[in-house]
Length: 84
Image 1 (cartoon, helix red, strand yellow):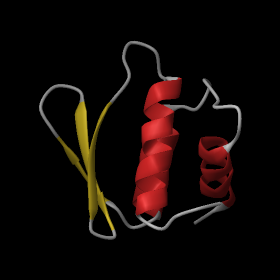
Image 2 (tube, one colour):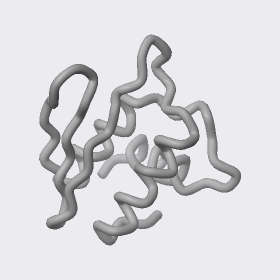
Image 3 (cartoon, helix red, strand yellow):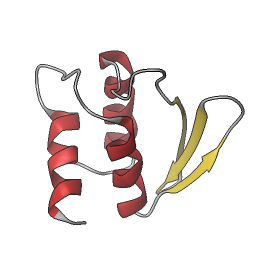
Image 4 (cartoon, helix red, strand yellow):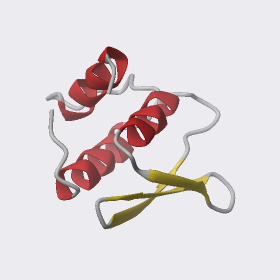
């Protein structure tokens, strides 16, 4: 994991929940952690990490992840044993 990935991980776990985290940065973080990322139908993205699976919706038209989705990403990473 490089410095950019660590910065994104800190943003995901920051309190209060941020509204300015770009989805592409989260996808890059997933890949850096060794997750399997695959395209679903429409804007769905399937992610598997350490035996934990989740489906997220890629935000559109805005590039930033909303706060609810960021909470889901945080929960997914925690269940997979990833913390900042």
